[in-house]
Each structure stands twice: as C-alpha cells, then as structure tokens.
Length: 408
Image (cartoon, rainbow, N blue to C red; front, side):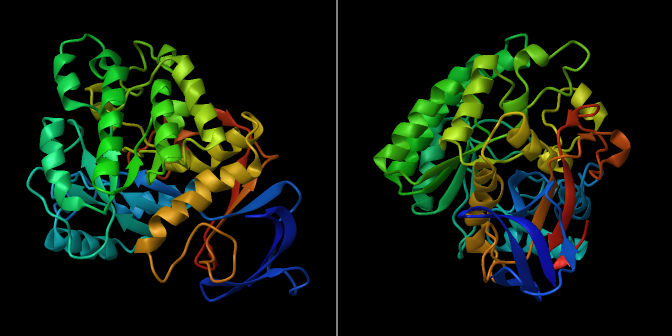
C-alpha cells in the first residue's frame, strides 16, 4: 500500500509517499509507485496520534462497562484520530501484581480492540513491582477507585520498592485535600497549593529513587517553574496536560454545567490556562493526554469527576495548530512522537510515534480546511456525551490507518 500527501516528518512537513508492507512502514520517499490513498494540500499526515492517559472502565469485574469498555474506547479513539492509548489502573479489580495485570491483559484481548492499548499497573500502600517492565501509576490523593494514599510519607514507603521504574503521578497532596474538604466549591476543595506541594514531593521522589517520572494532567502555572528546574537539573521527568485545562478555565463553570465541568484536578483561573498553553508550546509540557473519563451524565450531575475526550482528540489538535498557532512539528511531538516514545518499551513489536522505516504503519490524517461541529449523535464513546458538544473546531479527522489498514 502507498499513502501520499504532506507528511509530518521529524525533519518537517514534506510532500511524499509512504510505502507500507504488512503493518509496517517499509520506505519513505517520492515516486514509490501509484498511490492507493492520496491526500490533498488541505491535509497533513501524522504518525498515528496517541493518548497515554485514558480510563476505559473495563476490567475482569465488568462492573463499570456500562460507561465504556475496551471495544468502545477503541472506536472513540479511532473517531478522534488516535491509534494507541494507555489505560489507567484505578479499576474495581486493580492490576497491581503479575496475576491481576495478566488477568486484565487477557480480558482486554477478549474485547478485540482495533487499536493498541497499553495497561498501567497501580501502586498502592501494600503493592510491589511486577516481575517485568510496565508503566505504573501512583495516586497521591483520593480519586475514582481505591488506589491512593493518605499521606506523602505513606507513598514514599511504597515508592522505595519501585526504584528505577516508570511511575506516573497524580499530583494532589492528600493532607492538603483533607484540610480543604469543607470548602463549598469543588475547585476550592482541590486548591492550587495542593498540586504544588505534590509536585515538589513527586520531583523529590523521582530524583531520590531514580524513577522515570511523569506528572499527569498538569493545571497550575506556578508549578511549571518547578518542572523546568527539574528538567534543567537532569531529572528524568515528563508532564501531561489535558484538553480541558488548555481550553477552559473556572470562569466557564456555571450552575447549569457544573457537573460536566468537574474533574480532578479542577479547572483553574485563566492565567493558569494560558500558562499551560505556553508550557506546551515551549517544551515544559510533553504530552496532550486527555484523562478520558467516561461517566454517565447522571453520574457527573451527582458529583463524579471527569470528562470524555477521546472522540475529539484530533479536532483539538487542529485547534492547537490553527487557533493557537502551534507549529505543526510541535503538535506532532506532543500528540504523536512523545506518546509513542512513552509506550514503545511495552508495545513490541509495534513501534509508534514517527513516520520512519520500521515504525508501525498507523497514521492520523487531519484536514485543516474542513471545520467540524461536535455533535452528540456522532460520538463513539459509550457514555454518549462530550463537553465540546456544539463547539466548532477549525479542522477535522480526514482518515486513520491502523497497522497498515485504513479504518476511518
């Protein structure tokens, strides 16, 4: 198969062709033959985009699959231009050791998802590392599920056992959360200083225990200075930011939409939102990761936190390019290359993130001249809603290729 058009390569955007054999990229160049799929000047061909922070709500208990499952999350991802995801471990039956992790892997295979799904393992007060490499997630404070710690000291006792491992941190200080529990608004019950304190602690743990660290869904501008200093110091740390923390601020919350606009960490002031955009542009932040959290509308109205975002991932990338004036190459880094680099140690023989020989032939094609309105009836997520319903994004997802096959 040959795919032709404007290729977003590590060296820049160039017209060319991709020769695909089986599920791999065989060659990049010009005049490789008659194109099977040719995309015009309005389109950009990216290495398949990846979302390294999602909640598929699926495990061996199947107790939450009324919200989402591995099959429907796969459909939502493809609709959003996403070719691989990494699923968080805060399930009713959490994957925390070899046995429970392998049970979740086996359950995943029964769903026959169309995309690559990498599984995180959870870190809890009594857990120990698995016998083989996997990415881990540590919830500092209460979130959805039971995998969390009541103090930072308790978390350090657990992390001692995970020296040298790949650990992602949900940065909210549980002790500050406890002191803020009686505040009236959700945004004030999880204040900015909660994230700052947890960031300081996470960076200390990354340095002390030689972790390959990642800070999840960052939201507070003041913390970016800490992250920049850590990177300059040589710490192995990267950082996510979500679409909602880039697009919304707490002024967008109304009495009518409060349920839909609640998440952990919460929306911040507009200065923080702008700081996240600046941090994503300048390299302080490394990934657009959605924290795709599919709950029913009824659950959100009752105060369960989280928004579903997989269906709109590619549309959001067009917003970054066209409305926020991000260089195309930078969007490729934060939506394709960096997510691929994160999952590649766990996805062999598949290899994501670049249009290069030997990489998996999974591609995302965006149309920058075809605006798209997000409509409820078009969504593929099982929970059936999006905070972006009615929003017109400046581009669209033109096509998706999964391991050498056109699926959209």
